Amino acid sequence: MVTTDPIADYLTRLRNAQMAGHRIVEIPASKLKKRITEILYDQGFVLKYKFDDEAGKQGLIKIAIKYQRGTKNPVIRKLQRISKPGLRKYVGKDDLPRVINGLGIAIISTSKGVMTGKQAKEENVGGEVLCYVY
Image (cartoon, rainbow, N blue to C red; front, side, top):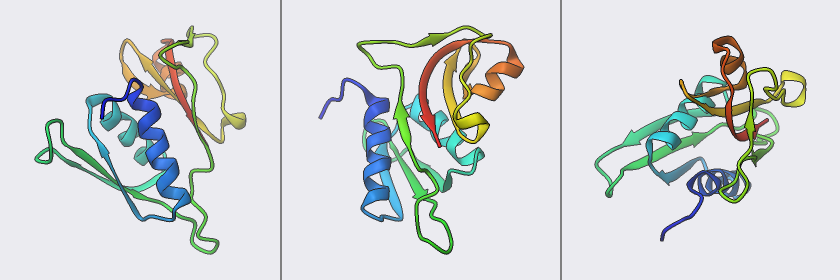
């Protein structure tokens, strides 16, 4: 199956796995999706991840979803796609978004690679706002 928006597909697979209460979700890999996974891990939104380059043409990303201890609710409350193939959203270095007053993160594709909004501010670059995670 060919998806026209692989990032939206990635976010939807994560969202669906959380709602179904799965521990692990498998997603077809790409460099961009691998980088987004690393960011989610670094920011504490996912428990673990593994890149399986042997599986299929482009490989698989296996993500262990993180749930809260007592309530068993997923740590990720919302995954929101911002820039879509039909309508790209770009921001300058001075207009980088703050997600829920800094509690969430914006994942931004910049000329220096994919990074969080905070990192983009430190690097002093703008770019395409891929998604919000909180």
